[in-house]
Image 1: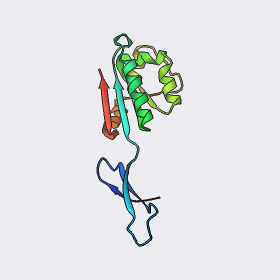
Image 2: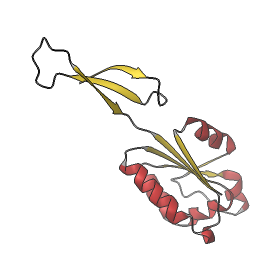
Image 3: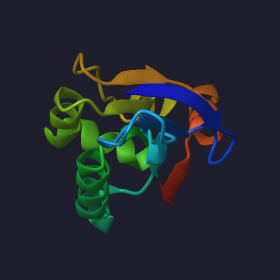
Image 4: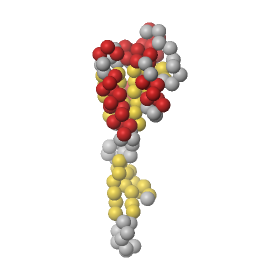
Length: 137
């Protein structure tokens, strides 16, 4: 299989591959489009009492099943989730988990060693760079 060209939609995530399908060599090769990975971004800024974590985890599970790259940003009250084990478990499964450094510092939450503390510039870059972005606030 050989990638021969990229389509501009959606965001250069579609490629064409060629293969012969057992045809005679004089017949044209068949072009089959296939979807490459997508980037899924999730912003969670709600307090753990609201219960959005269950929905976020199910969205992450579905995105991982589709072999998407998943980016999770914990903002404000959602940095309290760093006291739980599931954000670190997501990191072990390949999810990029970021948390607001300012929000964690104000809530006296310290680095567990797996998630990345950063500022709002990273959130802006995630919003621009992801194919899908969902916000829970």
